[in-house]
Image (cartoon, rainbow, N blue to C red; front, side):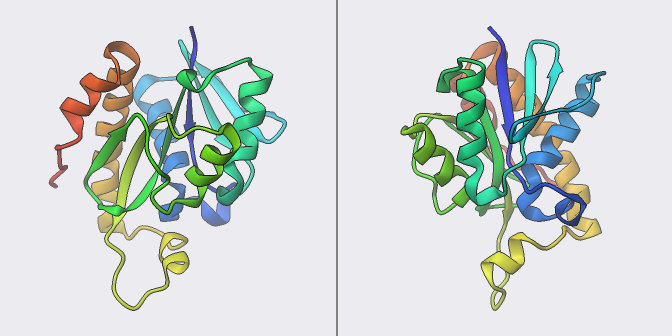
Length: 189
């Protein structure tokens, strides 16, 4: 059975290094680490790439309506929610941490909220990558749509290495094993 790893972000070069684009940045790291040698192909409202037994997906709807693209993907490929892993940014986690969950609320993340509503379930495996904390006095939207600093990119690069490992463990040994290995881990540079 093929699994689909869906990274959340916003399409276009304007958003490429935004904090909110961590899901897309993760997919690029996954491709680099696993040596995937194909290209993303556009289908409907998403792009996908085969990488061995995994299919990588970038929704091309904007973040807040990610559910539209994910629902189309599931219908087109006759998938269940058990076939997908969602990777996205989390303002409530500090930069340097990831958190894996099997179910739960969107926690204020509009992209995940859209997916939960579209699929009518919160039982979706997800990997949350910390981008917080948000500095005082800065609007949330302004913060998540801002680029990482060069210092933060160094930390993010190491965190993404760990996130790729975590997804590989989810795929090979299950979500429980991945949660036990990675949920308390903090990347220190």
